[in-house]
Length: 51
Image (cartoon, rainbow, N blue to C red; front, side, top):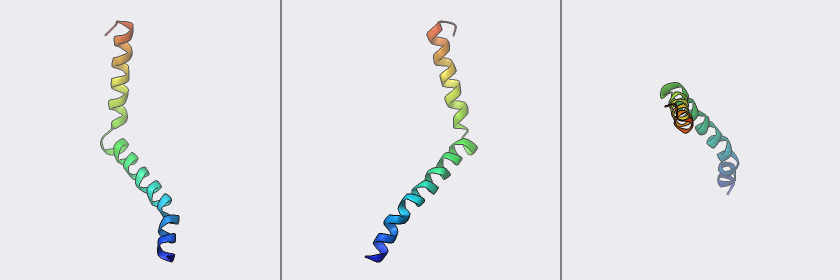
């Protein structure tokens, strides 16, 4: 029981570490922010009729 309680208490910290690692991977390695920005610009230009 003690091990299960310890795992439950530490699970939120492990999830935080993994989520930060995957966000770092997306930003640094795959450059997702550039893809999202490019898509947002295209949508905005289509809405106002320029693109």
